[in-house]
Every structure is written in structure tokens, then in C-alpha cells.
Amino acid sequence: MSKPVVVALDAMGADYGPSVVVDGAVSFFRDCSKKTNKNTRVILVGNQDTVAGLLSRAGGQKYPIEIQHASQVITMDDHPAEALKRKPDSSMVVMAGLQREGVANAMVSPGNTGAMMASSMFALGRIKGISRPALASTIPTIGNPTILVDVGANVGCRPELLYKFAFMGSIYSKLVFNVDSPKVSLLNVGSEPSKGSADIKEVYKMLSGSRLNFTGNIEGNDILMGDADVVVCDGYTGNVLVKFIESIASMVGGTLYLEMKKQWTSRMGYLFMKPSFNKLWKKFDAAEYGGAPLLGLNGVAIVAHGSSSALAIRNAIAAACDFRRSGAVDAIREKMAELMEEEKAGE
Image (cartoon, rainbow, N blue to C red; front, side, top):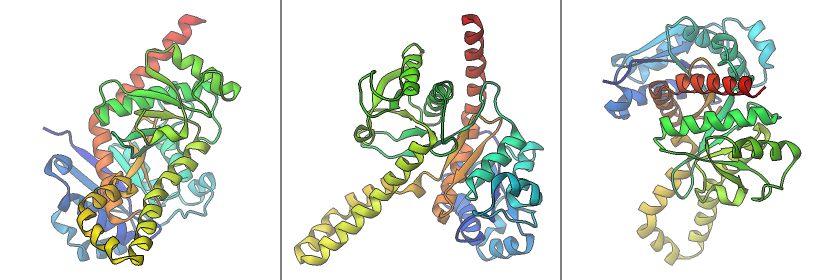
């Protein structure tokens, strides 16, 4: 029997308004498999009247969806720390409070990433041994999806932080994606151990001496080949990389469309290849992965794109359920305690 999950969902943070979020919540119960949505409730957090009207219009009354009123909204332009102080009744802050109080045990927001991280850290706290949580994004490859960590939560990272990101990413890959022994690689400008900055060389040395399945450095051109299950980097590099990868489907699709317009034979060929192309678009569609978890928190927080569609919101809720049920938070907590014991023993 699947573990009960209650997901608090920020209804007000999406770029396209609360209707997309409400539709995504309804789609989660209507379209996802029973295995995914069984024993799950969703609490939509936002303006009561607005959300209730949208939920009724979407036919959501028959599903286990509730509404928690919040009178304020944190926008993408708000400074994270200031917003938490000025808008204590914002949908994001109220949502985080629901998890802190135990009313919910997971949360999802397509809102301001910085504010989501700040409110999550304030409400849930960090796992002991983690100074900064990491944002882990799932990216498509020729093989199984790869976990890229960090993708924007930490612009600059000391070696010790990247070292711990590698362990958290490996645990996430193993428990959520069922990879038996995740291959962990360090993103670098070359595959040789001598390449990169002093900090990257130090991380390489640390990972080489760990019990992880560390496969060495990886260059950008090898990531989409599926050579690693987990790729570790700082948030600045990861954010640029993941957004570039997400643009590939649009570029390929746009180029293909222009070429098909030129010749009728190309259009005929497309009809035969359409099933294969649809699989390709789906594989590269960021909406299929829903959102990225913040690893290192004492709870479950999923960050979705501000431009999320209803499909992306639906899959972000599913990602929150998978993460909660995987036991990854407890596994990360145990691993960090183990690493701290090793650090003490080595002093």
C-alpha cells in the first residue's frame, strides 16, 4: 500500500496564473495512474474565491483537493528575504507553514525560486551537515534520465558542498529512479584529473576517495550521451546548462518545421516518422519532468518552472509524491550523519 502524501501546492506563483495550477491539480487525479495518485491529497494555497471558482470550473470537486486561503502573493520580482517579511500571508509562506505544522508532508511551487528556497529553509530547516540545499534537475539523455545538481540554488560552491551534492544526487537517483549503483561524474572542462580550477581538482580528489560510484570528470558534450546518472556542478553552471538543454526540443522542432515547408516529400516523410518524433519531443519536454527537488531539507520541496503548463504542474505533484514515498530525505539524513562521523574520525 502506498504511503499517504498530502501535497501543499502554491496556486498563485505561476506565470500564467492560478488556472494553470488548478488544472494541473485536477489532471493529477484525473490522468495519472492509480499507483501515483492513490492515498494522495492536494491542498491548493491561494486566494479562496479565485481558486474555488477555478476548481469548480475544472470539475475538481470530486477529487481530494482542498483550499487553504492566502491573501498575498510573492512575485518573481520580489526579493526573497524581503518578501518573506513583507508578505507573511503569501501563498508560498502559508504553503511552507502547512508542511512545518505537519498538515502537509510535501510542497510544490512554480513561483519565485529564491523565495521558495528561503521559505523552505525557514519552515523545514536543513539536514544536519548540509550548509546549503541543492536544486536537482532531471535532464533527458540517450539512455536513462540524468540528475544534474545543482541547477541554481547556489551560484558559488566550496569543494565540501559539491562533495555532499554528489552523495545527495546519488541517493536521489537510486531511490527515486531505481538506479542500482548511480554513476556520479563531475562537470569539468576536460576529462583529465588535472583539468579545472583548484576547487574542482579538490572535489575530484575527494570523490575519488569516496565510496560513491565516481566515474571521474565529464565534459558537456558527453552528458546527453547518458554517460552519467548524476552530474555535479555549481548552481551557476548548472542553471545555464539545464536551460540550454531545455531549448533543444524547440530548436529541433522549429528547424524541422521550416524544412518540411520547403518540400512536399519532407511532409510525407514526417507522417511516417511522426510517432518517433512525438517520443523525441516528449523526452525533451521539461513539462514531463515536472519540477526539481531541493535536496538537503528536512522535508519535500519541489520547484517547478514559472512558465509551467498544467501538464508540468501535474508531473510536479507526481514528483513530490515519488520523492516523499522514496524515503530519500531520511536516507540523506543518515548519509550526512555518517559523513560527519568520518570527518571527526579523520581530525
